Length: 265
Image 1 (cartoon, rainbow, N blue to C red):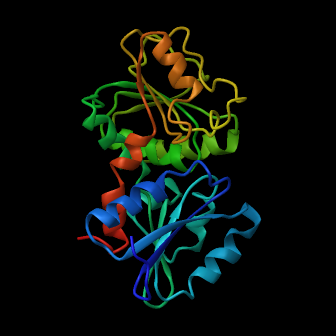
Image 2 (cartoon, rainbow, N blue to C red):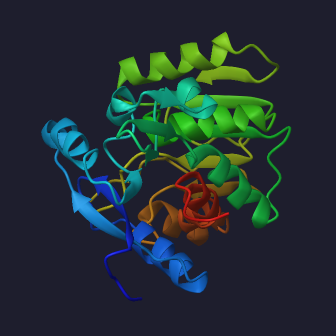
């Protein structure tokens, strides 16, 4: 990869940022397609997010910003225009810098997650799901699962405000998916079990979901990118369950995010 005066810049903001896989995947994509662009990681504490986004708006050769933990909900407030998925979820994972310096925002976590499941031949429609974590990524996944016509969606979050916000948003959509509250405990009725919390990024983290009662046919998915095999996924594999790592979400959304940033067709 050669960086010169014509290189378009993309930043990814998060805190922490060491777990991010976007630089690896985006830069490989740019190199494969001979796109003169580069994605760089920026560790931005929550208190500084507004100041950083305000400063980045002035960089003319900045294509946009990828947004990761814990900024996905907060970043939505800085966008002048939101995609439908971003409006539904109240969270964003990609900001495009327009010519006048304003941000246009979109959320691709949900569609990337569902497409990643389909790519691995995991059927979503008419399935029962347990989703633990209702923050930015969890909200994106929840709405995409409803779009994919899951039969039921059981939700848990240790933050009652976050849980209530997502529950209200999903119920306001109508539709046939049954929305319920749950504990972080897999039941024999769950076909798909999803961790959308940051719990598992560190080896000292506890298991975010109790898999003791899980169906032997369940798929256990973790949105965490690093480590690739979280304790939850290791526990799932040890129980003979199908483990679905977080990389599938990002691998299934990199192309569409690059297109949203107007760096790819």
